[in-house]
Image 1 (cartoon, rainbow, N blue to C red):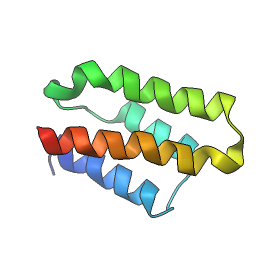
Image 2: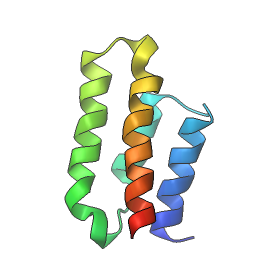
Image 3: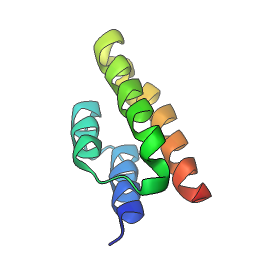
Image 4: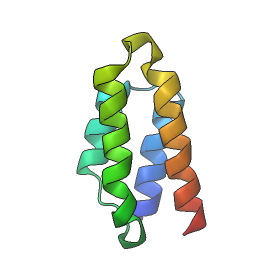
Amino acid sequence: MSHHDRIKTVCNRFIDGEFDLVELQSRLETAIFPEELKDNELEILNDLEIIRFTQSEENHHQLALVVVNRLLRMLEDY
């Protein structure tokens, strides 16, 4: 499985509600981002961190979906 596919799988499992924001963040922090997305990796992780620590937990999934969908679009572009 390629790095692209692994990240897509993590994103889709989060979308399907298999795990929460904390687990998503952990999995993406340990994922190997493709070279073409290295510049965006920190931005994605920071956005999730901001949601985690500044937003109500009841809003985590909805807000993180915006970040996850942005990441999926980036993966599609490469």
